[in-house]
Length: 241
Image 1 (cartoon, rainbow, N blue to C red):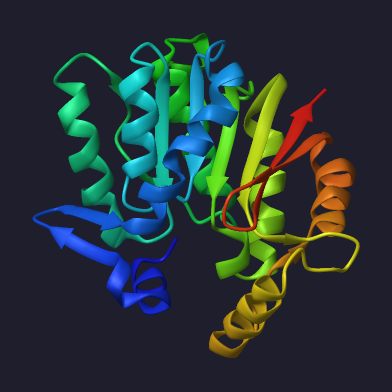
Image 2 (cartoon, rainbow, N blue to C red; image 1 turned 30 degrees about the vertical axis):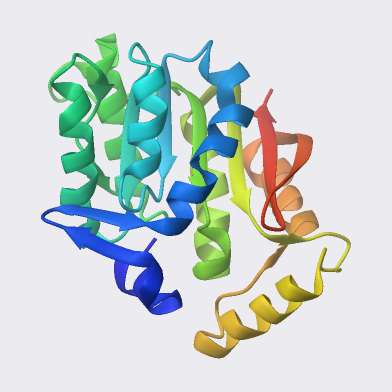
């Protein structure tokens, strides 16, 4: 998530203390996200978060799962220090949170960097100096509140990138608002969509069917389930076969 974009969405919900940025929305949804991800995380070795924002989610998840390796990423480089500041508190206690990486989802080199970091962290043969890792390594790719505040090409690129870096049987999990069969689940989400498109014509609440089409046809991902969560959002689970 772009820091300025998030700030502009709701100035009252953005706070920064020293290097740590605090988003109220991330605080509100962290528990439900953790609850829904728990069955996957309990069997995961390596997790990639696309659009880590402030770093609050990675901190919250790693706090309960010290043996899981988390790779946070963020498009807005201004937020990388915040992510690392949150992580530092747990790293001192032996948790595994890798340094936050800049990730422009539309840049293939950035996805290669994500794979290289994973290969190094897991000490695979692919991590040899000068050798680019070819093997998908991640058990889970998660992204929260990104699809509706970025251009559609970013959503497509995240899906394709997840297809590249996920192990067979791994999951892509997307949290946020969606339309289903062209319809909004609430009038407030219809108004939210209009507000987003008024701010930036490339933003907006996405059609879940369009997301599923890209996932299936371009990333080898199958929609497994859609879970209703608070605040008129969904958690959408895709699995790589």
